[in-house]
Length: 287
Length: 236
Image (cartoon, rainbow over all chains, first blue to last red; front, side, top):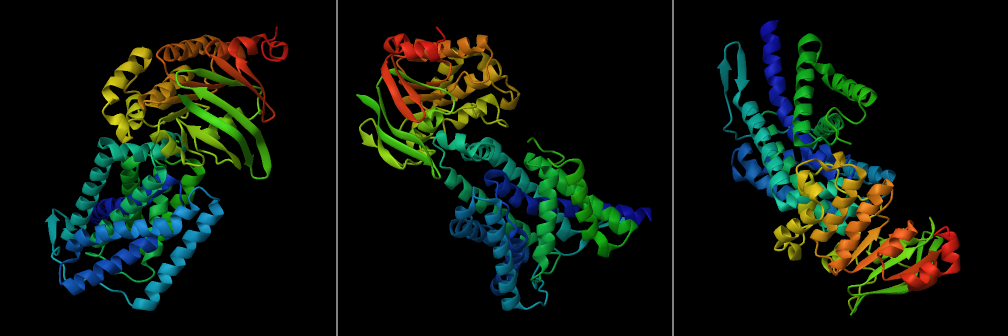
């Protein structure tokens, strides 16, 4: 039992890092422009298919496709921003909900029409096997995914705190009107935040595919997990997102150990409600 | 040179018109104030001039160029700077980061170090607190930071919206002393203020705005000696 718990906790921590990375894309978009994007999970799902197809046609490992998918997804983010988000940012929440839920349904059904419900997994992947640490077996794929996740988060943190553009993004996030009065083109900041958020999804998707398959419904889980983390982190910066991801990963591990793996989403969602009750501004929120 | 010329400005929120044919101007190097009661449209005037709001009709000319309807960030690029009502500093950035964010525009980058020294000289308190997160500042310090932030942008017109709001009397006079110092440095100032006596003291000319219309204008002395102004705003 103890060994099982230990094994599940290690898995939970590794998965928590990946959860955090996926949520970071959403946190960045939500933090800078206060937009509620319900299609976030579907963005992840589409990116996973992209990883699958690029890996298949170019015959390269799925993990390596992150170098291609991230820039493609950055541009994808800019396009979605221009076509949809730019029109609803700063408007009524209802318009945002309607537009992004529409996007969610659109992407999910397009995926269903294009690829059917059959799950797809990578054909080529170099991240195989596992390392054994005492009683714990750590799959190389998950370990790499977690390390890349933490690395990407550190990179974004550095960008936000050490560059002029990063500072402008944080200023826009704090007060967009005051930022625009200082000559910061906030619409450009919104586009940048949306593109960056999507690029992060692209990186995450490539490494998720090294240990998971994708189907048109995959977005549901990733969207839910991301929203739980963003609410938990409460606009508390990159570190808040990482900590929230780790907490969620470990809660899932405990649930799997002591109860039923099939109920893990239900437990996560209960945690979400609980946080909304006790700390509606999030565990690490500043506002 | 005329820094700002506002002609026949009409502004509405939805169907409710709040400004009616408002006209005024500010010469380069001049300090001008708009006074008037709460709800007269003073903030609306500044919001329209600085590009946050778009007017129904009217013309705004900035150093000879028609800038009506341009977005706020583009007006900032041309040298307009508004210290907004309620200060609106970036709460989660440090004092120094607040000032650095103000040097985002390309034209402000080279002068940043020099300007930073200038504002720290003007507000030594900010230098002491440079690494403190801005939301922990007191009201007076926050107002100083808001003014300092605007000064970093090398403004060709500095607009101040109710800088005395929410401040204790001793801080009000402190803030106005710094406005006076900026005026002595030759900064072109457009001030909006409910606190009429101090506003008139730091201005060359004044306009009185009531119910969305300019009802009186003249040099600050003239306005201060007007019978109605004395009764309504100066309490004499």
